[in-house]
Length: 382
Ligand SMILES: *Cc1c(COP(=O)(O)O)cnc(C)c1O
Image 1 (cartoon, rainbow, N blue to C red):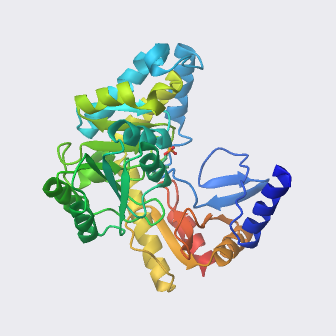
Image 2 (cartoon, rainbow, N blue to C red):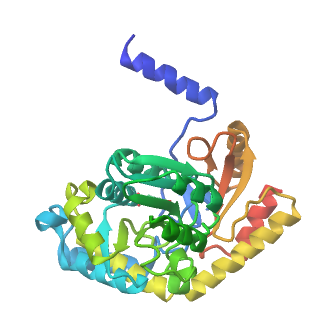
């Protein structure tokens, strides 16, 4: 049997199970109005929560960065790819977050792999929320450490898991805001368990930075936690920041360890310096973005009250991620297609991105949406 024949059989099975994924091709910049495959849609399907992905000031900073630095970084950070632009961004992020140091990674996926691999070995353990992002799970597997998963946001389950570990380093890892459910991890209680259990806490705040906390410093700051309580803070720059890339914030020793040991940091080309310049501008807009965050909160409130009035199956989320649970994958796909017919784009999320039987419409709001656009979405859902 040829490889292609085998692959085609597997692909056909996915189609029958309504699990086949298809890419949409956008022909406009990212935004709440999106042109896809020649049609115009109102989109509730990006992570561009603050509406910065096509912001004129960030575009200008990127363009000036290109004139100043050229297109490519030319090398990995440890060779000659680390520029003054990258360095300034790291220092500005550290200042923003209130952490001693920050290290840039080319993507969140790489940051999560790198942290696990650099900090953990076979004799160590890592405890994960069951709904953590796939990149965290992959990092745990790559590290060779013992992986123990606990029930979603269940602090008692975490405590039981902690009591099962008797030796080695222990890294407890959780999303700050859960990417598919939109709920926020109980970070104070988790930090407390970590202190009692001698564990180090890592928070992946990909969906929290820019949105939660004062100036958008994220969920860790929102809970009033310090770098001592959350020694490893990871965030991404391709969501609320509207650009691309990621960072890890931590102590001097942590960041130096990642520079020496994290293979996804060492063996990859640094992002373009111009991108770092664009991200510095994005950081400034995030910090000054109180109006954007306030409008976003008002949109969330309007959507939730409207959806409640319609009797829709809302989840417990106060963030811009407002999923509607459907359950069956075929049904979720069907609803997404119906919405698309009425000009609205909402991506269906299906296993393995979400648990079996947990297919949903992942509605996301952006500060660039208007109240009228949220009302249009509610009408279409009705
Ligand atoms: C998006 C995301 C990542 C990956 O970040 P990229 O920069 O897109 O690679 C990691 N963790 C969480 C929770 C995410 O949502």
